[in-house]
Image (cartoon, rainbow, N blue to C red; front, top):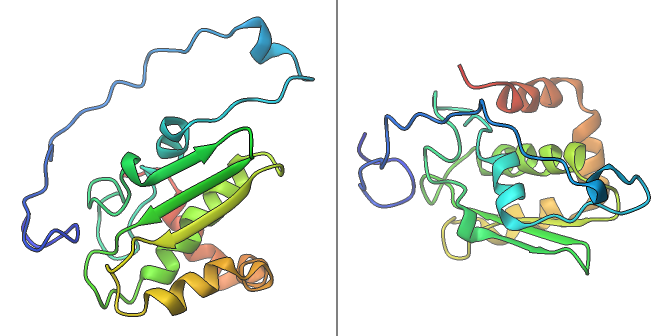
Length: 162
């Protein structure tokens, strides 16, 4: 597939990658203790967001290189999570919806102790500042999360990839 992923005509790598989800992580005593807060790392955050579906293409955000683990920053002691995403093209009309989908996934998945920053990777979108301003506005995100039509579209992006 040529032209997707914001790479200026890069080929999609690992197009036929198969993931084995049959294994289970061992549970430690600390993880079972409800009084101990779960620690989070960039890998875990990436695992949460990689399978979000692109709103326009039948591929995930990972498959389109919109999200990459190297663009996920986590400080568990500071309770912060930052995710930079790269739209497929500089004038991507779906950038706001993609970012909202990532933000909603994180809000639904993480403890309220985490402060989340979802933003466009610098210099990858023509309206980067305006898009990032929307994600940083808590009231705007809350209002978007209550918009029934918008929430249906976000839920489609968050549903299992077919």
